Length: 257
Ligand SMILES: Nc1nc2c(c(=O)[nH]1)N[C@H]1C(S)=C(S)[C@@H](COP(=O)(O)O)O[C@H]1N2
Ligand SMILES: [Mo]
Image 1 (tube, rainbow, N blue to C red):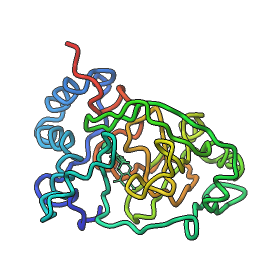
Image 2 (image 1 turned 135 degrees about the vertical axis):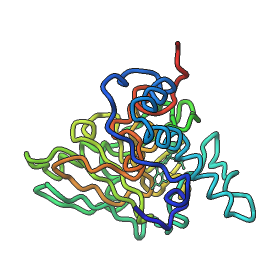
Image 3 (image 1 turned 120 degrees about the horizontal axis):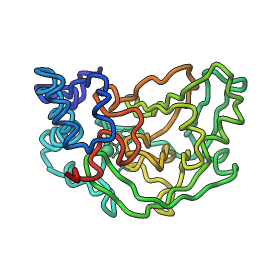
């Protein structure tokens, strides 16, 4: 864990959750957090509320340190909020952007932006849902299916998962191989029918349509095929690895009972 980051500092540091209790499955999140609190005893009392506030307290921390007060307002356009766990991120463009593919593959590769643009393109339009509650309806993303990049690399039979790394130097994400091969998972270079802006993770970000937006790693620079899932940045801090919208520890819907 990197103690330089506001999210990793101080009494509000999100605590890792114990593995999910079986009886929590499928229960709406408010109820689930309550059950988790009871089930986990003293640890739960600390962990559940801090987990719930993890990303918000991170953002609050970022704006506290910003004398201009602009961080908290960073609109990122059309209902999006700007998230970065790194305080500054280098800018990359068509001249210096590279995406490397390595790990348990027969043909490691390095793609430029032009290489990615030359491959067959897929455009998806679905709602973006952040685990902290905000949603942006019907957002177009366009790029190369992750499955095509994996097929080109020749994934070995021992492989079971993907680890994603980012040129912010901090953020990581993960998917199982099965999830990564879904047709609604893209290596995206367009968002809202424009080139992905730097603030949105450009020139290339991951887009995992069926999952909470934290799975959609910005400033994507590495795809490593691994044997097992290695939990990503927010997952190490308690968020679900399987981040299906409405079926994981987010807040898609209020409890219905
Ligand atoms: N590299 C990187 N990717 C990231 C994040 C981050 O902090 N760093 N935050 C995630 C979260 S929690 C969200 S909601 C979205 C926000 O994307 P946006 O800034 O385009 O709104 O990016 C996701 N991908
Ligand atoms: Mo998020």
